[in-house]
Image (cartoon, rainbow, N blue to C red; front, side):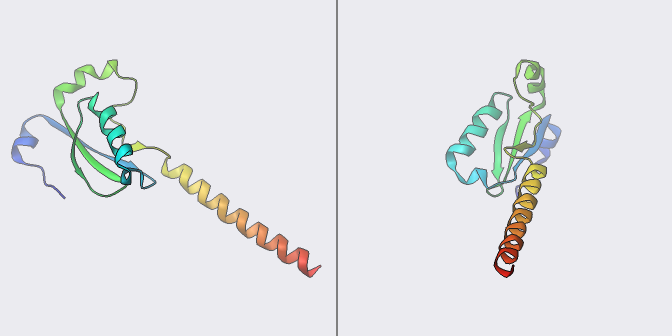
Length: 109
């Protein structure tokens, strides 16, 4: 992971990490789409950690234009939230278990 330099920390930069609950950034077009939208708020790519996380930075003075944006410039999650992903997985597991129990019951009755 790239460390922050003294100049970045003292030079009025903001940093954030944007996460996805799915490997969204594996696809170059998805990463480019995110970076293009974040660029509207002044954010630039520092590094891609993996297919689910990227680190961005912007000059702190870019905050002045935040009121003109149609999205939250401080968002840290894109795509499906982790909560929704968890509910989806639990629902699928419970549904599969119910189906198995139903099939067992149907063949033993």
